[in-house]
Image (tube, rainbow, N blue to C red):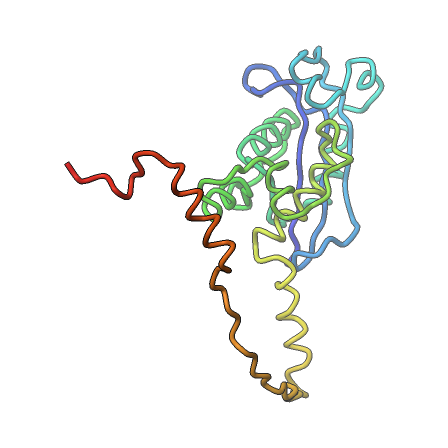
Length: 230
């Protein structure tokens, strides 16, 4: 099964309010295993970067000034996506911007049936836990030490690892191994382990310990265990 894990960076939070994509990163996974194939592009949004967005991803107007527009990359992007399911964290946000940019290019929107939202999966499987990408990386032991700022391709790489863990971890590959080995089953008997009888341990206090305990108790005034209910 081929899936695409992707992430986006934007000039702000609202495409309908005039914000645009400035970066998109996609990672290909097959049977939940990264293949090494990816798509990545920085995009000139043709509008100033909001200070709040710059603080998140660090992509400045000067850096993006000589980058291509979304329309310049749309054919390559769609060829990479094909008709695969698209995995994202808080996917409705990324789909909103992706489909908004596609509409501006006169292209068909990506069907929402293809959307796989890891945030929704995490909330269902880990109720009461923190569900940010950083929190999930920490929970599953995914190394994010090099994530100083948000970046679409880096975040997609981290999310791909988190997604595998949310969907059952590395155990998902066991089924493939079992299928290959089904024609030649091997029975392995467990080794015999001798039972060793051990003498019971004694935990009674020594005379000195009992005396020190009694001395300590004598210093307590109005102990709770002698108070009459009242």
